[in-house]
Amino acid sequence: MKIILARSAGFCFGVKRAVNMAFQAAESAGHICSLGPLIHSPQLVARLEGEGIRVVNSVESMTDETVIIRSHGVTRDEEECLRRKQLPIVDATCPFVKKAQEYAELLGREGYSVVIVGEAEHPEVQGIVSYVQAPSVFVVADVADVRALRVGKKVGLVAQTTQAYENFHAIAQELIGRCKELRIFNTICDATAVRQNEAREVAAVVDVMLVIGGHNSANTNRLARICSDIQPKTYHIETASEIDNGWLDGVKTVGLTAGASTPEWIISEVVEKLKELAK
Image 1 (tube, rainbow, N blue to C red):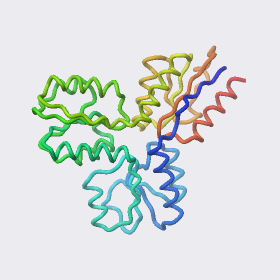
Image 2: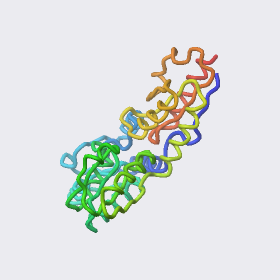
Image 3: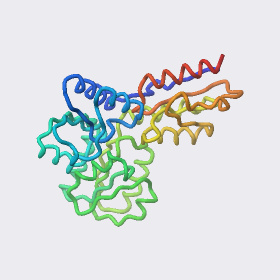
């Protein structure tokens, strides 16, 4: 059985940066926590807990700890509350997420109705929304959501950094006919587009596709949907233990990709499991 692994599978720049910052902080700080999971990988979060970094879900419960801001960022109110408490902060927010926050804030300040393409419940999107000081801000998942909006004459558009470009483009096209002025900042991370394109390429030439990453990871779930559209035999797994041997019956070629929050060791374990099953 041939195994094809996407070239860019696994940690993106922002996640790698956040993880390195967390481990460095664990070496030098006493009491330390992260505000929400640092990244959407339960296995990596468990390792960080082993290094003394506990996950805390509210600023109010923090006392004298060093606080790591997760890669997805936090809301404006949460950050201001941390600073009022004068807690030591390690800001591991992905620079691309920071840029999306800044553009959304700029659009709101300049009087645009702000439309954010993304998942309303995702912490990154909630953070971006919090930076918009505008009369109206909307979160949309797709073109159907846009059609239900009543936007003003001036509309600004940004995206959750892990969105699919095709969806972002379709929403921009829909908005063009619904306002007098549309200002667009393409805040989709380049690494996201690269991973999605590679996933399409691999899914198109294999008998089975495995997408590795947290079930709570937005970008991994999106990769799984993209691959499923091309190869119906696509399976989203977090670890090698979830592989069902029956998936590989009669399979000559299996493809692998992984979300931007998936550690290298988890990808390697999946590859090794597949090699064992191929014997």
